[in-house]
Length: 520
Image (cartoon, rainbow, N blue to C red; front, side, top):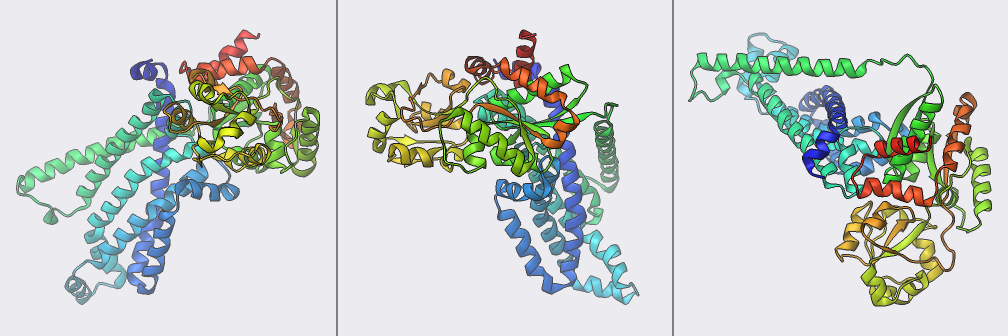
């Protein structure tokens, strides 16, 4: 499938995410200006605050954006709020610094003259200092706005939406067309925003301070009128976008939020569960697919940011509840069901019909060269091989930590690579072993060999719907719908659905919808 074909098939989703991206970026930049400019003015007067404020702003900008999002989630939840807060914080430094620099760079003789003609300190500020400093202030705002467009792609990691959804979904499914469908509009948006803010920067700069070698004053005034019309039209379009996207056309008061983790199978399940609920009940579903890892989704459920999501028995048993991995299917499920209800007020519904357990995968040539069929075979030659597991797998007791203790692995190197890029690294020979899920569609795409867990280390990973207790009390019909859906799925079906997305490039929402139609 070519890039243009992908765009034509998914133009409605791309436009929707673009509008969402514009809206989020505009809100973030507006708040950054409202906060940053006054702070810049204050520290230009109160000199003792100069270094501390700029130092704090610099430290905030030095913190990795993903880390800042991680810190924000326990306090702000998921969705648009933490994403906007993150972008606001990252946008403050250039605005504060340029405001401070612009005001401090004004000729002291001019300020003395303004004071000499009787202007008060406040009048000097808004009649002299701010007008003369505006070009410098706008330069800082211009930097912040362009940077904010790129930073807002991170919102997709926590269900905030925007063009980052396409970028990160494409990375995880090795879908270059999807990556470009998100990246190219983001780049064009950044260029357009830079142009618009550049116009504002020119308009706020006094004519006397602008170079007029090529234009006389009359031509410059005419050019300014054209620039004002461009800004007016842009403002009107932006206002219409805000108005249209803020109106809720739904009169249905029964609504729940379904979330998911950030890989192919979870995206399919998110849409599948949502469609099944909407088709079989009168409940409207707000979809927050592609939120992030286990802890993000579980925290979102605890904090009532979402009402349900699909997890896996082994993940909850080992990673969330911190039990040592065991292979007893019933004991794992019963323990998870009992503990989540008692400790967190979360209901666990019936296990679905597929077991997406962890596995270690190698290329066929690697398996042939070292005669690998089991994980014990791998342990024998592990000191000659490089493993590139996902970041979550590295740190989990039911992942690399426990597997190393059980099989006595001694890999030559461990290089953590999240998402589908680890498959690419394996295919390119940059690594020799990766972790995988037994229903991954990418296994078929890259023709990989799964090694047998001959010591039964990995616990069962049957999919289980986790539902907020209060939500299930309010909407008891959810249990019947989700339990019925679970009986329709098995390992082969789930693997094929994942393959349709990962290799054939189909939209997870369409794949989920087509499957539900096929079982009706």
